[in-house]
Length: 128
Image 1 (cartoon, rainbow, N blue to C red):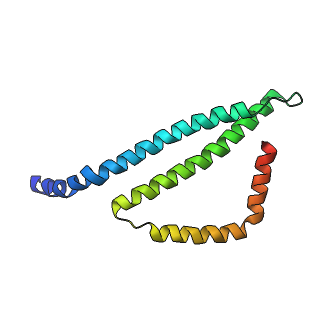
Image 2: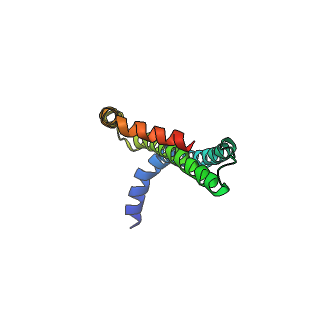
Image 3: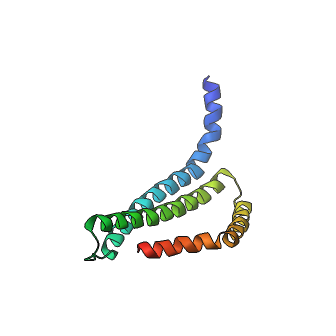
């Protein structure tokens, strides 16, 4: 039993002392960045949305909450994707092919979803 644990410890400890620290640091930094950006988005949207005389307070709050959710979710996805792309090489997974494939898929979806994206952007400006 001790020999088996020693064998795994000898293989696991070198990785943990080099790449493991990097993975943990990336996760912590991504989490802290998410919290800071969420607070920044929350305060920025609440300052940017101005009160209108003909709109009720509840509809202003709903508009603020909608914008906060849209911006924070977009930034959350960007932070998560970046963190995953930084962590994968630490497990010896090559990300070059994945990035190339994502670029091709993104280009195809961009051409195919032009009208959908235009409608989303128009809706976002209407909410703003």
